[in-house]
Structure formats: C-alpha cells, structure tokens
Image 1 (cartoon, helix red, strand yellow):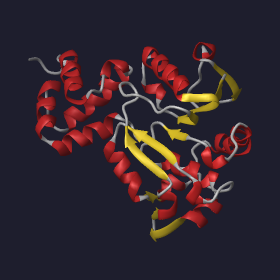
Image 2: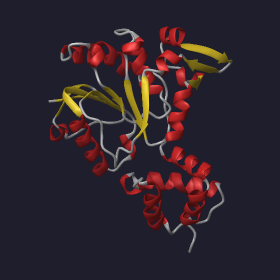
Image 3: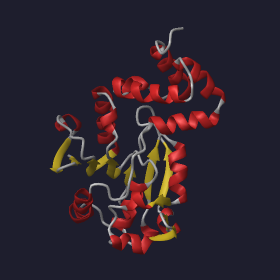
Image 4: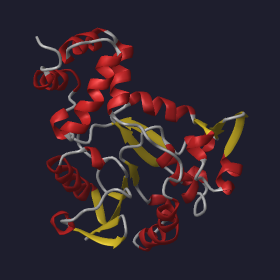
Length: 263
C-alpha cells in the first residue's frame, strides 16, 4: 500500500478498536495531527501504525492522549470564571433549595484543571465536604494525571493567588500539588461524548474549548444531548472560541457570553 493513502481504512479499523469515530472530527486538522505522530514513530502507513497500537498499550494510550488535544489550565479565561462565580452560581442557587444539591458536570475534563477550578470557586459558598462534581473525559491517562493533583506552575498562571495559597502546596521549584480535600470533591469517569449516554438532571455542564475540533454534525448531536442532560433552568458553559448560533433548536437561551440556559 502506498504511503499514507489508507486513511479511510484506518478510520474504520480504529473505530472498531476504540469506538472513537474520527469522521466526527474536522478531517484536515485531525489527519494532520495523526500523520505527524505516525511519522514520528517511523510508520509509513496508518494501518501499520494501527497494527502496532493493537499490541502496544503504551503507544495506544499515547495516541489517545495525543488525539484528545489536552490543552488545559486552571482559571482559563478569568473573566468567564468571574461571571461563573458572580452570576451563574447565584442564578442556579435561586432554583435550588440548597446549593449543595447542585449537580455539576465537567464533560471534557482533561487533566482536571477545570473541575478543580469549579470546586475552589464553589468553596466560597460551601464547605468542601458538601461539594461533589462529576468529571468525564475520553482519555483515561489524562484523568490519571488529574487524580494525582500535581501541576506545573504554567498550568496555574491564571489562578488567583487566594486559591493558590489556600489549596496548593509547592513541592518543587516549578511544581505544585492540589490538596487532597479538593481532589476528593471530584469523581472522574471515562465517557465518550459521541457514543455513550450522558448523565441526567444536571444543573451546570461545562464543555469548554473542545467542540472546535468536531464537525457541525457532531456539535449538533452534542448540544442536543447536553440539552437533554440539563434540568430546567440549568446552564451550559462553553469556551471562548465557541458559540451556539441556532440555540433555539436545543431549547437554550443565551444568558451571557458563553453561557446558555435550558428553557
């Protein structure tokens, strides 16, 4: 088989192996990423690479980790988190008897920066032992990192000093560890947003800076499933590079930039 002309076959075989449908990702962008990794490991066809990841678990995990584009940091886009604290949480609290009953789902949590940010903000309103957040991702390796709570300082550059001082311990020049009390507030679970059932009755769903990698068809599917997953008056928090143009279709109304409420 000629060099790199087997991408269509690779996508089919990879789906059978992983249940990850590469057709639902933007092709040009995803193919370029995959090609660079396949070449890096010295393979001249995609299917030869696939045969290797079938038997090489470490390379398989490396590939999944690479595919899922784990660019994450604490308190990313601070203005949005400020709005989350000052407007969204009080708005949700109006519809609940007790803020500790609020159900929050970080739907593409990567290395945990996002759900842990939510915990630290919620801790202004609630004691840590009353906070419980669901965090899911397709990438188990990223979630294993999340559970250790160990982060380089670059991941914390946007985090307000009050959170750094209260919840982190410096363990070397450039490395910090998040307190076990904060880590206990997050339950991590593997979930493929394009295949598996979503949790129900959520009050807040976070899905930030993930959907830019998907096709329009895949985005529509995810937004529809998020809508079904949210309770009435629940809020979807998306990323700074994303916007829902046809929000009425999903029974959403915009309540602020990057925040949509289920009607």
